[in-house]
Amino acid sequence: MIAPDDPILADCDALARRLAEAARLAGARLMAMRAARDVKLKPDGTPVCSADLAADHVAKKALTRLLPAFPVISEESAESVPREAVLPEAAFILLDPLDGTREFLAGGDSYCVAIAIVSNGRPVAGAIAAPQMRRLWFAGRNAFAQDLAEDGGTLGDPVAIRVRQTPPAGPDTLVSRFHGDRLSDGVAAAMGSRRTVPASSAVKFGLIAGGEADLHVRAGQTMEWDIAAGDAILAAAGGVVLTLAGERPQYGCVWRGFRNPPFVAAGSEALARAAVKAAEELGRSGVEPPADTLSRP
Image (spheres, rainbow, N blue to C red):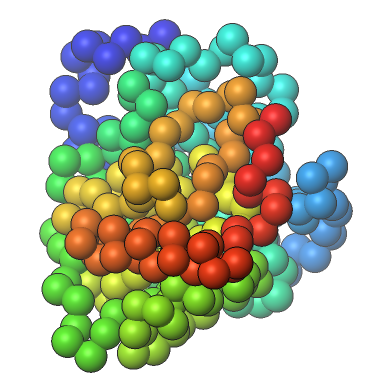
């Protein structure tokens, strides 16, 4: 178990670099399996294919080498994690070896590998590798982006990134390509978005962190491994993720099956809280989040 005062947690930028290495290696495996179409449905109805499992294997092998003391909770094995296995104060890794499986299977480019270290219920380091987009984002105390080669290797040095000020004409809002909902669409409209851009997976957090977009609202179902890495990267770049209750998300919530409440990701806290307020007003007018986000196991 990694305690919150363990010396290894003192240098979060160093931890982020190790996560980035594991993420890019898993991303390279996804690129090598780009033709995989052997899709199956998991018990929760979400798709999985051999590429998910292969990337999961590569990422776990790398994490065992790079961060051997950290327990790993992966999307592909979380159902076997007992309730008592995640202590609220302990540090652990959340892994999504293929975030955006539908995007991957559809031949799109905005799928990724997302890995985060969580301590005391909050992400302290994260990495997102989007091999088809040739992009890598990672952060501890500071946030960085780096280009990837076709074989998954890195190109050039990491570059520090920062969120931008919201454009006077309104935010550029990233919307889910496959999981849209009325509340998310309503908030995007209420915020005066100058444009909405479809994208899949956690790459949306990287784009906001790097100043390429401003806002993302998600009222539909997501899991902790979907957003923890993006939360870490966006926070280090000056942005924020808030639940629609106006709070920072908490991670390691085995009691709710690692499900997230609805949330907003934004380039500033002011923009995020304005989106939360817009969601509240839409809720009072009868536009509610999808039912599955309101239930608690």
